[in-house]
Image (cartoon, rainbow, N blue to C red; front, side, top):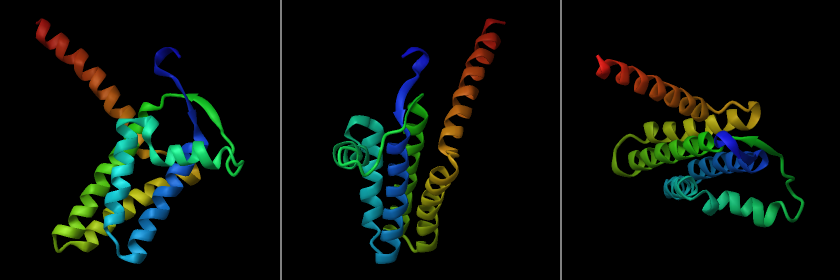
Length: 154
């Protein structure tokens, strides 16, 4: 598709968000920080290799064929969603590290809850802060390149 626009299944995105919320909550209730590390790994692998995303595969191979969830495919740039997912994975690694290697469990769980809260906001009101951040950074990068080009030409 032109201009970087791809087809995105919004139901798959919603399932991904619901899975993040569920696993963070389960990690906290069971006090098993390694679940955060596992979730971070799933998110980062899904970011680096979108076709290998565990939640996406579970949705596509099991939930959708069984009719449990129905697709909602739209034309949209998937890169911003991958950026947000990768950012969530990075924050979950930080949360895990704080829970395992430091005396800052409140901060570690706070970061994990932040990731879950942002997933909940995206799930319920369709606002993706990571997507907005990606678009802002991309715009800033574009204007920075133009500015640097003009400055270096003088």
